Length: 258
Image (tube, rainbow, N blue to C red; front, side, top):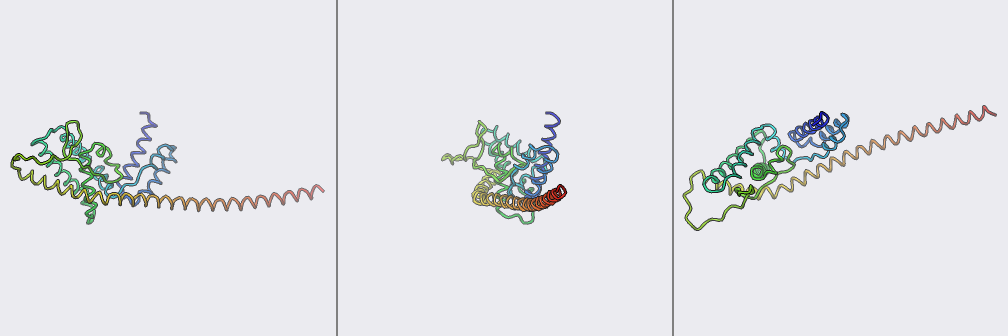
């Protein structure tokens, strides 16, 4: 990669780091400023990329901030996800499922600890998104620049790296569960119920974020239109004055020639 391409990547990465860790309430205004800075620096392509960055919902912002503030978060998620994909079932998968529940619970608490009294819906969306990042490589790849919360309905891995639905109960007598396994199973049921509620609020928050973005865009365009109208009015006044001077000069020249 040449120095020019590296500079463009660094400029975009810096903008992403700032926009996706700062409070989303100031996202749109700061995005406009960063895009303008890129254009002023002679990087119009990077400016367009910055302008295309989408504003995150608050739950997505919470997860992005967690991942960017602690590099170990991503590696812990990736490691557990890899272990789950390699496991073929049996005691190992139950152990990893319990570990998955503990990790999601820990990361959720860490992500929300600086927020005063976070609402239940926010907590549920953060939990569902972190759980999805363990289950879905595409979600994991987007950590740090997530736009909205997400969720994954699967449970446990299959050999090809995907995730299969929770197995149906067998009629044969199952081995006695340990306390850890019972707790993991109970937690999984709670998480499923939380996901159902989170899904109901996710689209509302995403639509509200899109509405705010459009409102910001309309206000910005209205301000630009008002400024353009003022410049047009001033240009017309200058044109009128110039034409008046031209007419007077023409008249004076005519009198001198007589």
